[in-house]
Amino acid sequence: METVAVQFEAEARSGFPPRYNLAPGAAVPVVAAAAAGRVILPHRWGLVPSWSKDPSTGARMANARAETVADKPSFRAAFRRGRCIIPADAFYEWRARAGGPGKQPFCFRAADGSILAFAGLRERWEGPDGALDTCAIITTAANTLMAPIHDRMPALLAPADCAAWLDPATGPEALQALLRPCAAAFLTVHAVGPRVGNARNDGPELMEPADG
Image (spheres, rainbow, N blue to C red):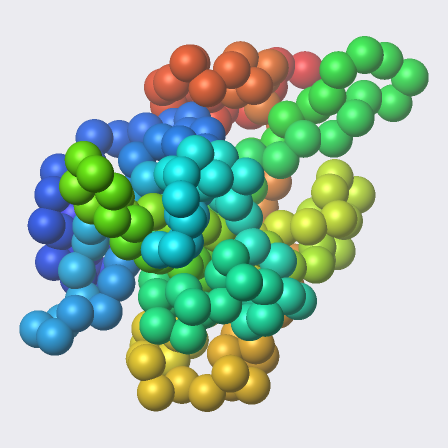
């Protein structure tokens, strides 16, 4: 987490143990703007709008589409005033195996080894047992590296764009311009083993290239 704090010039308000396989519902670090500067806070992956009657709705809202995020009722309030960055070393995506059962998982990482900055949204839900901070990752159309595997990918912010994304004064048109597919050369990809398909499995070996 020290590397994340340095790259995003943020103060970590909580400890975050290393994780290598996360699914919706898990706790993830979120970089957010605060009065005294950027902070890193824990959020549950799966956004629950403040007006929701039941926090279980977050299970269906782990991702928000860039094309509709500004207008969709579930996300538009967070798009206006709850933008954040969700940092990650890597992300996984799956492709159907040609002529065979199951799907092949792939691991995507930054080509320069830096931490990826997912464009994210966050919102606080107040319930009878207290407050729940939740988040969602914005997705966009696939770039040429991702397209053979999946038609969508996370909206990745360039380092120069992070300040504008977090700035509450940035207008909607400028924000939409940031939610574009990154250049294919920004990422590397390799196949990984099937154990990553079970969220109960965790460890750095999950990110290693698959044998053969």
